[in-house]
Image (cartoon, rainbow, N blue to C red):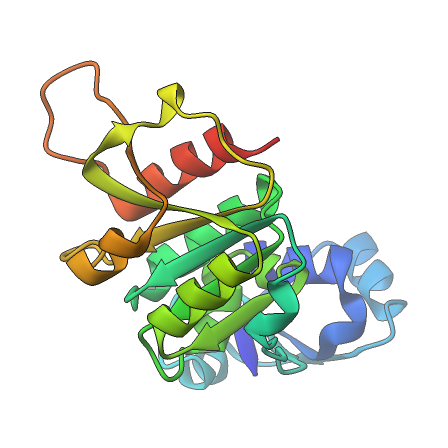
Length: 226
């Protein structure tokens, strides 16, 4: 797996250096920093900028790329003993997914399940989560209804985000809880919403259309944490 850009790579260097196989440097760095990196236990290679661009298909690599160990997906059924689970139903945008995973890790979510997809580009999600995916149990399960049923059977109270839901501030959140977020364009399906214990929303101070799923998810996760 190839990761690029300073922020995610620096996070992995700081928190998971053993995950790095080879660090590629396409720009000069401070000598003390280079000396420190040489002691980290992974291989370091200096490469020309055009070679770095070719490796990441001319994306903005900021002079740093890294070959890292593959992320191992979890079985979502191992999450059934957790207290706080996030379910992404139909989300496919890796920028949104990465930002949500970063927020979920910061706010104490125990595990994240992506539903409605067969696979996702995990390299991109590691990058857009700024490396936080390595610290977040993450599972993919195509059928959201299987996930919903298993969570409910395991004692979770299920909450879903929708503009027409109850104000999240007025709801007493149960200790074992799962938050469902729908896709940007369509939100949660009517079938999923009908099976949830509570449909919740963020009441706006001013007339406004809606927040994007990343911003809304962050507010809801914060208000649902213990």
